Length: 214
Image 1 (cartoon, rainbow, N blue to C red):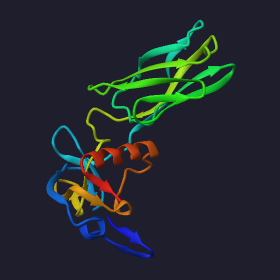
Image 2: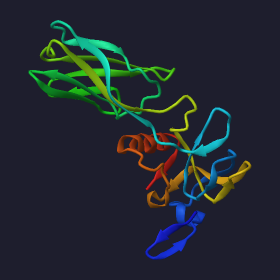
Image 3: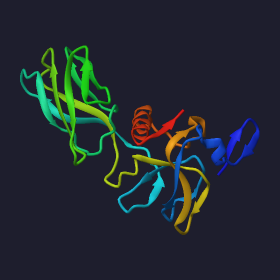
Image 4: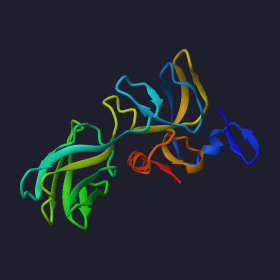
């Protein structure tokens, strides 16, 4: 797969991707069936120990997480899915016939003009919420959540950056990957239509591993 600079099509090399002299690289095994994987692709590591092209999280809209049947202002529970993307959660309620929102900041804090709350991420991938509104939501009405989530295979979580094109169309392929160091942001290939929240979380996860996009 090629990258395009101006009108000239060219295949990326490690020199195009690396943004610093101090790096740690290693050979990684890309799973069969991944096709031709371009240099610069952000890879995820699955439970089978092999590497896959990172996939975008699944979006959920208007999931009913609680129902107002009285005058309650506090609601608790768990989101239906696991492996929630931090920073993707918005909890909504109806107060005075108007929709209000509490938005999560990526660190478990839900805030908004009409309330606040917390989102606690469990080791098993679960996400427990507790929200309190300044005024009781309308009765009757539903409390809903919009968010993104990954799957148990963890292919939505980034691990390394591929440094050389690899053909894993019909068999596993081994190729060099950047494990630690800096990569040029413009040279990275992300999942198509990845959300801003998912990409921000992915960059944060890579940075915590010592792999930086600059």
